[in-house]
Length: 185
Image (cartoon, rainbow, N blue to C red; front, side):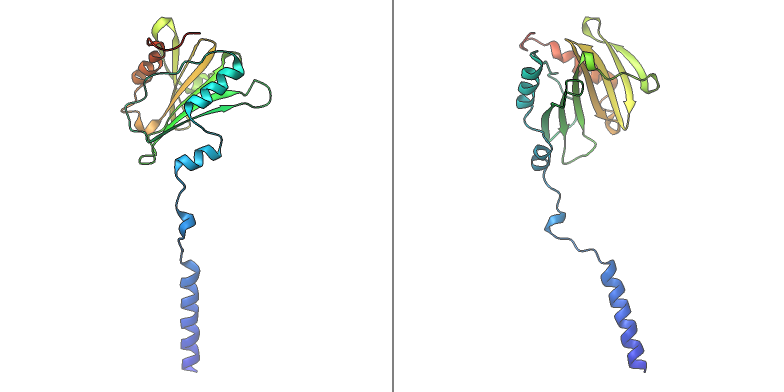
């Protein structure tokens, strides 16, 4: 009887441990960004800009500067949804070494801009050419929003890097749109 009880207890213990063991296999390795992002519609920034400009028949200028943090990848995406109200362009800068290093540029036609809610606004900044930029915080991101050349621009950076990427840095990035050498509308 003792052998049966001992065997039964040993069996239950083994079964319990095998149920709670987590097995890793090659499918658990995260896919690289260069594989994941194209699967969800991202491509090179140049390709996405070209699609966006062709769709709207209007040139698009992007900032020449980026935040002073390390990125390993950048991708662009033009979202052409039904009608023009939800059509948009985005560029994402990310790092597979540091998830907090995340910067994004969203651009919409000004006639379909996203309204700014006062409860998110932290400050308003003056940019070059008397353009007003609204600085706000939304869902873990600090965002600088401004309008120019018939577009609404939103420069977003992960709030965890706000000690490096300050509102003033975002304004400098926004002001870099007008540097010489960029094509004109």
